[in-house]
Image (cartoon, rainbow, N blue to C red):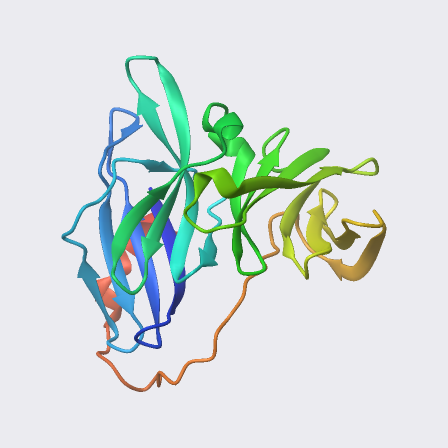
Length: 240
């Protein structure tokens, strides 16, 4: 299993890609994963030799949130003694290239991790708590008001979709969100007025993506060229 993350390194003014590879044995994914980092300015992959937390990433969404120069994913650990999962947020610092674990609100630590998804709320880290995975009628939005401080988590919104279940793509601003309906329509929903606006954009229900970007001075014609046979084997395995 592969999990990818990408973001802009503020210090080096460079784009980086993080790839975590989970090996599999007897139907179970092994910990810790192998972690590799790609730098756009250098054009090469390198393996991370530092500390790698023994946590799983929720592969249902494969979504990330880039806040404060870190890539964030929803993750969980297995509590063997209590025979349950403990949810958390796994973050990777793009500048220092180290992992950090952040705690969730106490009410979200125990529960199905597939019902959680990291997100960006302006310049703050947020978490979506769906009532049923992604295609939901109800979703609460929690925001970490002070980064890294567990006590600063605040439940800001409780969304009830009385017209059709959907999946949240992200915030247009602090009062509107974009979401995709199960029918494949793209919709803007105002969290304050509860009004919705349908766009004339239709795709499959999983074909939409919303993300932010930063301008970069990195030139694409610099760096080391990678030949196709350097990654063809992994590409073939991940083609599906």
